[in-house]
Image (cartoon, rainbow, N blue to C red; front, side):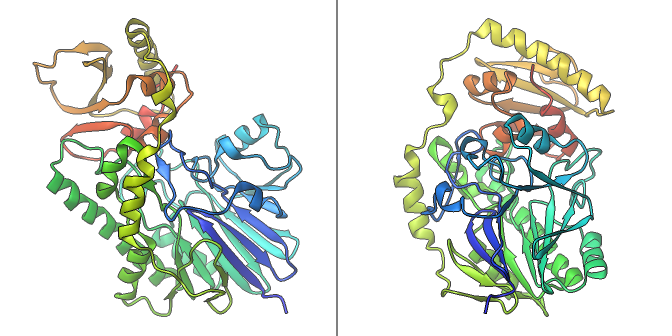
Amino acid sequence: MMEKLTFEFIGNACGIFTGKNGTKVLCDPRIVNGVFDGSWCHYPELKTTISDLMNVDALYISHLHPDHFDERNFNFDYEMPLIVLDHGPNFLIKKLKSLGYNNLIKIKDSETIDYKEFQITMFAPFAKHNFHDAKIGNLIDSAMLISCDGVSALNANDNTPSIEASKMLLNDYGDISLAMLNYNAAGPYPSCFDNLTDEEKSSEHERVLERNLDHMKRILSAMKPKYVLPFAGAYVLGGDLRFKNKYLGTITWDECANWLNNQDIAPTSVVLLRENDTLNIENGLSDRPYQEIDKLKMRDYIENELCKVRYPYQDEETPREDVLIDDMQKASIAMKERMHRYKLSSSFNIVVFAFGRGYSIYPTFNEVDLKENLDGNKLECRMDERLLRRILDRKSHWNNAEIGAHINFIRSPNVYEPDLHTILQFFHL
């Protein structure tokens, strides 16, 4: 007899839901190393290939970040039904259509549809930011609640619910069998912030993770799912940036599970999966015994194998300095026009370095005398000039470069302003 609803885990946010009649919905098929401008890699190393994932009935793409939608290797049939959120300024739908994918199952925020034996509900971002005030905040994420014959799973991926949203999910949708929740804080902080000492980076690493884990616990208290699967946001850095791994806002899902198991999260139980393990969501049992991650092997793999990773921009020519600086000024003007459109401002002076010199790109464009201190708050940004060239030309994206740990910052004072980093995403031609 077919199980009502199962989930086969692949890696990161990728996996396959299978319903009682055998219908398969694939989620976020990022398989190949090297997203986020080359630095993000899987650990454990994946054996699955893209060709192994083609025999499915539909594909859910949660959002546009490349660890969920890897355009480099998105080679699915153009007739494949693609499940997407239909909400707001939808960059994902625009991208898919530009690639020739028009068989889209577009679901609005909180709308439920029937797809074969499934009932599927989609959710827009539950919060602009769960920990900081933001005017714009999260624009692109989605979450999917998928149900079959009374068994349900919330694939939240990067759309971490607020506590209010968690209560809503319980009240409006009843008992959730499995909550798939992100516990990590993927991004540049604290690993890329050179205003912090190594000891301060370690301390901030612990603080950010404790904050996220505590939020996860509060979600479980409000939502009361039967099972929770630590999910998405699992990665290591390869290549020249691998030294930053120890300061990332990440831990393994084993460490997350150990933390949760030392808390009172009843009635929820923690489940863990490795590549190709399949979970019976109704009873919480996997088809194979779970194998813990060996952190010593992980460190050896990073140092002996992932050390060979090169980033795309490292194989490009150094740009002409005069042209780059001229285009930085043009991009600064365009950025401020976009800020005005969205009614955004910042208390920070933003300085981008190129060829050893600093250039203020906000509030006014000018070369900065490094011997003099800028008045007020300051954010200094340093990266490879070849990557900066790609960002200006829209071949790379500032946000992806940040998440990939390619940009180093010095921030004074060390205060996070979410809208400031949204502003920097407008810095291009």
